[in-house]
Image (cartoon, rainbow, N blue to C red; front, side, top):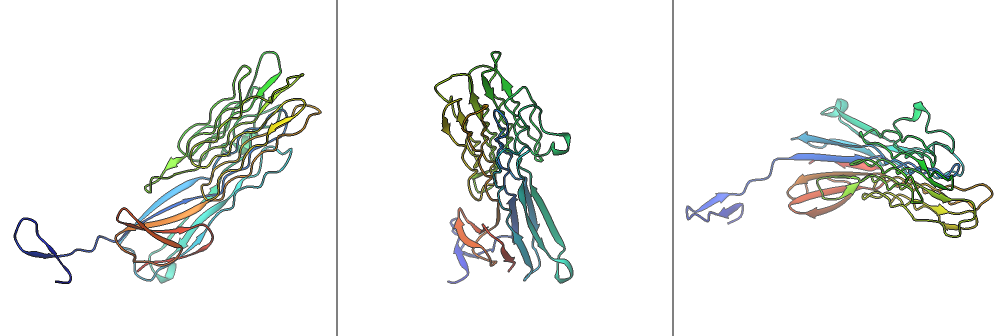
Length: 303
């Protein structure tokens, strides 16, 4: 009998009910690049994330989706480049007014001499590989502080803030750069916006480059490491479509440079309970929900 289900308590059939049309949006901007200026550069911060819920939106409303690019690494620059914003815009005169937009608030650590300038406090990058203070990310978590050991031979930059946790401080002894902060876990069970790991530099005749820091869960890139003679590894990029920050790098004087990583691009996801009722993006189903995923610009239209 079409349109009816069976009542397990024995009272016959009852009409199937369509789930309420509640549309949930998630978006995150592109992540910031790590820095490689000076002896060790801080890890990049992730893009800012935002969520929004619409209950029973009007039919045939088109929402314009823009997905932010991750920041490109630029050698010997501090603070490093910021990622681009992701946004959703729709409604207006054609229906329910609705708009929100976020910037990709990534950014590298400070230079080899000073932490980031006050005007960049929302970058979320870690501190440089000196005794410097990390900055605060727009989602409220702090980049790790940079440190140098007492013998002035080990420079340990701070990890970038994550969207779900602070970046770790660089070590105070012969250790490593700080790990990136963990990303925020959205309703789909995936983490987004991990911070980049801080760079780590050994100087004055050390023959091994030291330990590589980790990027934060949610797409953060790992930090780079080097010594006075050889690069152990360049930093890695933030993962695509996570908004993760790039790892930090750096260089001792007259030594090969460990390059910093690029920020990861952002993403916009739309979901609602039940079968497909809208159009746009890559459409999948999981756990009783329909997902519209945008990894590039597009349009989501309500049923």
